[in-house]
Length: 394
Image (cartoon, rainbow, N blue to C red; front, side, top):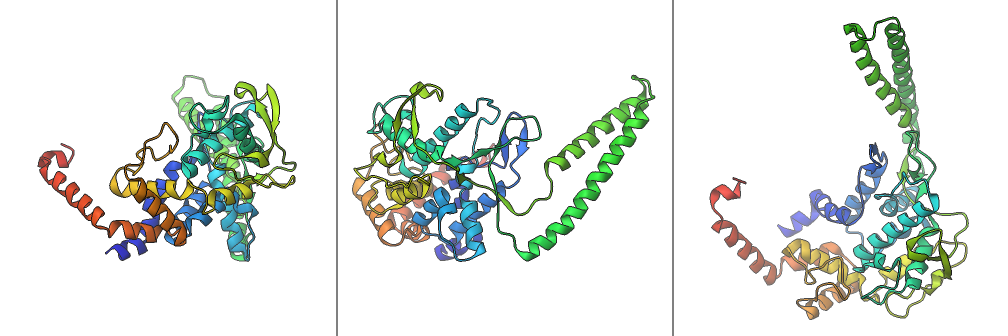
C-alpha cells in the first residue's frame, strides 16, 4: 500500500501543497486588487512533477535557487530549470511602492527570510537592521547574502493597470507545436478583442443621447461597464509565447552596502558577497559577473551543511507525525525548539544525504517504522473516543 501511494500522482499534489505553503506561492499578484499571476501555474506544476519524479532534494533546492544558471542538455531541461526559479519570483512583493530602491531591498528581505526559514531553519530577516540578537548571524552576513538577491532581477517594468511594478517574466524555449497553437490562439484573441471593442463603441453611441436617469441608460451603463472590463482583461492578457515568472541575474551584479536601520537610502559599509559565513567557516567564491545564486545553492545543498538535511527531514517528520522532532520547523536557532530526539534527527539527516536525498525513500522508511505504526494506532484510538456528532463537525 505504501509503494502504491508513493507512486500515485496524488503524492506530488499532496506534498507540493506543503512545499508551496512554505514558499510565497499564489496564483495572483496581491496589490490591493487581485491581478492574476498568469504564469504562476508553471512553478506549481514544476513542484508537483519534481516530487512525483522524486528529484533529489539537493537538486530540488539548487534548481529553485539557481536553475537559470545550470547547464542543460535539452530545451525541456532548460525550461524546467527556468520555471523552477519561480520560487524566488513569486511572492507578496510591495509592488505599489514607488520608491524603487526601497522596493528592491524589501523584496530581497522577503526572499532571504523565505530561503532562511524553508531551507536552513534560520530567521535571517532578524539581522536586517542589526546583528541577530540570538543566532550567530551578523549584519555583514545578512548584507553579504543580500548582495546575491539584490543582483537578481525579480521585479521589472510596469503593469498596464496603474500599479508601479510587475513580477519578472522569462520567455521559455518554444516547441513547434506550441508555435502552431499560439498562431491559432492569436487569431482568436484579436477576433474577440476587436468584437469587444466594437461592441463597447456601439454601446457608448447608444448611450450618448439618453437621459441620465432613464431605465435604458441604466441598463446600458451596466453593459458598458461589463464590456469595458472584458476589453481591459483582453488587453492585459495578450497571447504570448510560453513564459514563466522567473528570476535572472541583473546586468551588473554587485555587492550590497549595509542599509542602516533597513533604510535603502541610508547606506553604510559594503558587505562583500563572498564573505557570507552564516553556518560554519565556509566562504563563497563568487565571480564578479554573477549574482552568486548558484554558489549559494551549492553551499546550501552540500552534504556538509549541518542544517539543510536536518530541516528537510524534520519537516517531513512534522507532516507525517503531526509535530517535528524540532517543533519549530522553521527555526533551528537559539529561540527555536530543542530536538526531542537529537540522535534520531542526526541519523535521519545523515541517511537522507548519504542515500541520495530521496524524499520518497525517507518517507517510506518512516511510515513503515514501528514508531509510525504506534503513532497511527494512538491517533485511531483517539478518533474512536470522539463523540460521533463531533466527527462530522456537529
